[in-house]
Structure formats: C-alpha cells, structure tokens
Length: 532
Image (spheres, rainbow, N blue to C red):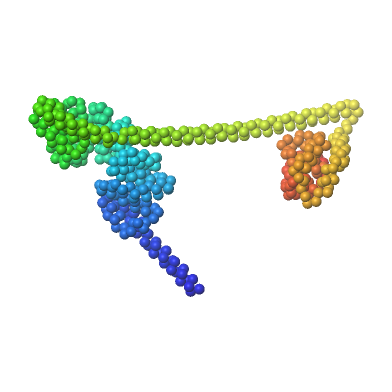
C-alpha cells in the first residue's frame, strides 16, 4: 500500500515539474508575439533565451519556428535555410489553415526570394493568400500582396503585379498607415513605367515622394527620385532626368552608380560630352548587371566619334551583360504557376456552383414529392367522401321506395344489418372450408412465413370484398394491415393467433384496435370485433 501511494506521489511530482518547465516557454512565446511588430529585436532576444528549443513540440515548436523566422526577417538577418519555417507550415496547415498558416507560407516565400527561387516564392505567396482568413485586414495581408507583386514585377507580369500593388495600397489606406502606403505606391509606379505609361508612373512616384519627404528618410527619397529620373529619361526629357539624378547623388546614398548612368546619358543628349563621359565611366563600376550593360551601351554611343577601339570594347561588354540578363529570366515558369493558380480557383468555383445546383434540384424534387403526396391523399379522401355520399343517397332512395310500396315505415337499418351479418356468416363459412382456417387454428407459437402471409391476404381479399369496401369507405386512409386485422377479427380469431398471422405482437394489435375505434362507426366497430 505504501509503495502504491509513493508511486502516485512521484507521478504527480513529475507532472508538476513538466508543467512548470512548459509554462515559461508558453509565456515567452506570448511575449514574443506581443513584441514582434513594435520591437522585433526584443522578440529575437527572448527567442534566443529559450534554452533548448529543439525539445519543444507541437504548437510551441511551430510557433517558435514561425516567430524566429519572422524576427530574423524584421531584423534584416538574411535567411537562406527553409527547414525551420517548414515545421511551422506543416503544423499550422494540419490545423485547417488560418492566419498563422498564411504567415508561415509568407515567410517561406521571403526565404525563397532571398535564394532567388522566384517560382517557389510565388507558390508560397499564393498559398499564403489562399490560407489567409477572408475577413483579415491586418498588415500581414498588405505584405503578402506587396511581396507577390514584387515577384510578378521582377518576372515581367506587370498587370498581375499592378493588381496586387493596388490591393496592398488599399489595405494600407484601410489601416490609415501612411508609411505603409509608400511601398505599394512605389510599386504601382514601377509597374506603370515597365508598361511604358510614364505619366501614370510619375503620378504614383510623386505620391510616394511626398510620403518619403514627410518621413525624412533619405533611402526612401533616393529610390523614388531615381525612379522619377528614369521616367524622364525614358520620355527623352533629359533636363528633368539630369535634375532628379543630381538630387539623388546629392543625398549621399551609398550606391549612386545607376544615377551616374542616368546623369551621363542625359548629359550626352544635352551635348555635354566630357561630363557625360565622366559619369558613364563611374557607372560601369556598378555591381548591377542592368546598370552595367546600359552604361556600356551609352558609352558605345558616346565614343563613336572618339575612338573605334573603345567603341568595340564597350559593344562587347554590352553584349556580354545583355546575355547574362537574358539567362537570368524565369518568365515562362512564373507564367505557368499563375495559370495553374487561376485554373485551380476556377475549378473550385465550378465545384461549389455544381454542389449548389445539385442541392437546389434535390430540394425541388423533395418539395414536389411532398406536394404530390398531399394532393394524392386529398384526392382519395374526396372520392371516399363521394362514395359515402352516394351510398347514403342510395339507402335513402331504398327507404323511400319501401315506405311508398308498403305504406308504413320499416326499420331498414336493422334489416340491412341482418342481411350484412348473414352475408358475413356465409363468407366466414367459406373461409372455414379453406386450408387456411385449419392452418391458423393449429398455429402454436409460430409465425406464418412471408410467402404464406401474402397468400393468406390474397385469399382474404377474394372472400371478403364487400366488408373490405365498407371499411375503406368509412376510413379512407386505413392501412392494408389494419384491413386484414379486421377481417381476421370478424372470423373470430384471438389476438394471439392474429399476431402470428400478421407477424407482430399483441401490444401492437391493441394499439391498432384503439385507433380503429376512433375512426370507424360504432356499429361497424362492434360488428368487426364482436367475435374477437
């Protein structure tokens, strides 16, 4: 006994210790979640304070994986390994989707973007949208649309990119977050500029510039100013292009090589060749393939009048970097993914529409069946009442005829009852001559077989047609089993024998008898059950 008590105490202590060990982790994860938006560095610090994250399991493990990936992304820590975020994706997807599933797919897409796997990134962002709750209006929805638009923009799908930029912008307007409006506005301008709609692009770039000026952020201003300069360069307004490129250079940002290219090209078209050559030579030092290729192309045009050897070198460099750009394109794969997504959405919509049509058709059939049964029952009752009225009229005519012929009243009902009883006795005698009578009399704790029951009921219909007709006239909705119960009662069998014939029990027959008493006339009921 002492051993059992000690064992229970030990188990109780282990459970308490396990609970104490799990509670701090849950508390830390809740704190991390509350710090994530405003203080991501504190959130990352708290996550690093968990001693053994590899021992976490279930929801705690999934939340740790999601929060750690999220905090690294918000703290600009480059992540290339997707094994951690896959834990969150697998767990939350098994929990029927939701906001955390959408977040997990979003940060998986960010990792794929870091690895330049644009096709996988698009798949992940689309999955994030599919799993996001329909009524969500939080910042994560804006981020999903924006990052998906960026992926589409990079692959040349500008219409799709523009649509998601606008959805991202609408979310920022709904939340009244002015700073978040900057990024989709900038993206919309980029999409328009890629479609050569430079006036529309400039409208959105200027809106983004206003926000960056209010935020007093040089990096944000530099990006928009350089984009505006590019638009003016494409419109051949080289004065404006040179003006905005100079503004970017004067901001003192870390990499101005793309603006050196814009400024050099603008100066070349303004016929300031020496200054143009200076800035274009600076731009070819860029690490960006686009900037480098275009800079060599402009140098090629500039040096045509100076030195053919340098022209050839610039042309070779331009071709080399142009080929590198073509090799990096993944347009076809992204296009196929987009088409697959749209096809899947259309199939889902068709399936839902087909289910509704089938359900509607079934409801119409069900309602039609109910209406048909109701009308059929009403018709039967109507004809039964007509038959009863006709019989009463015939009986009244017979009475009137007898009174006129005999000159005095006769108790016709009694005479008719006697005639009916006489006919019943004759029918009973006919039945007693059949094999069924002896078969039922000799039944002893044994039901008739289903085949025997069908044959018996067929013979009863042939021997007692008139009484059956009268029963149906007084009780139009009477069931066949109740009719046979009445006939067997008229013959004089006891309830137990009748129960064996009808394959039921005494209690059920008593219930049926009570129901018949309510629906039959007193005389007919007494005639049926007087022998029983």
